[in-house]
Structure formats: structure tokens, C-alpha cells
Length: 117
Image (cartoon, rainbow, N blue to C red; front, side):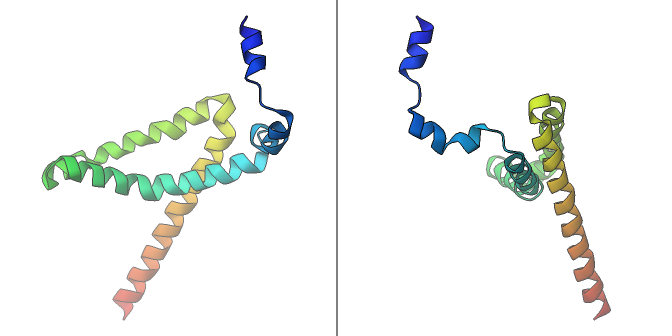
């Protein structure tokens, strides 16, 4: 009974070919999405977390609760443990590290030139 229901809702062949690249787990797809997810994880997540805390709590309370953003690191670590998402998580860590290095490098250069001037 269940197999008949599954076959009745099966995707037509022309639609299967159009989206075949998505389900094939292309190695470039996992790398690119993981890298950019790591970039967003480093840049957008802390800002969104602070904005959310600021909407709910006073400034002092939000400042005290901000270190809990480090709990978000559990997500990439969990992705590394699972075999199916390990490649994505590796590229996510690369994106996180590269983004952090670029931000720190640009910050140090700007501070150097501001102090030097």
C-alpha cells in the first residue's frame, strides 16, 4: 500500500533531470555552501544574536547574555561528527577561520594606519 502511494507522488522524469545536480551531492556544492555558511556564521550570527537580545532585554542584560553566542559553535561541531555532513562542516570551518583572519587583518591594518597618522 505504501509503495503505491510513493509511486503515485513520484516526480516526473523531466523534473528529475532538471534537479539531478541537487541530489547528486556534487562536491563543489558542499564546499561552496559550507564556506559561505561559515562566513555568515562568523559575521551575521553574532550581530543577529545581539539584535535579538537587545529587543528582548535591557542593554546591561543583553551585554551579560552575549557570551552565550559561543553555544552556537555546537552546530559546526555536531556537523563534523555526523558522517553525512562532515565535508560541509569542514568547509564551514574553513570559511569561519578565513573570515576571522581577514577581519582581524584588516582591523590591525586600519588601527596601524590610524595610530601612525
